[in-house]
Image (cartoon, rainbow, N blue to C red; front, side, top):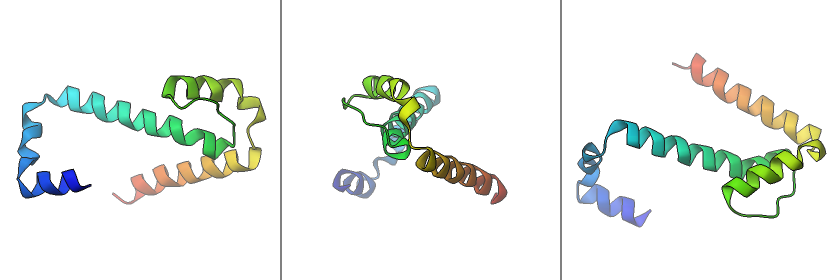
Length: 90
């Protein structure tokens, strides 16, 4: 957080203009995918034994049958509300 504050004070936001838009979109998509995959074990209540994203995804696939149906339903409803209200709001 401190680095972002210093970058804002130093007016370094324009530095992103030097990086191509497709590269920034790809980075953002990869980051969002990583965050989503790392949150899924908590939502699905599936035990994972690794900390890196590809192995977490494999643990999720192998443990999908033991997912808690209540937390899975709650997560799906919350995600649907998030997308639905996001489109409704503007």
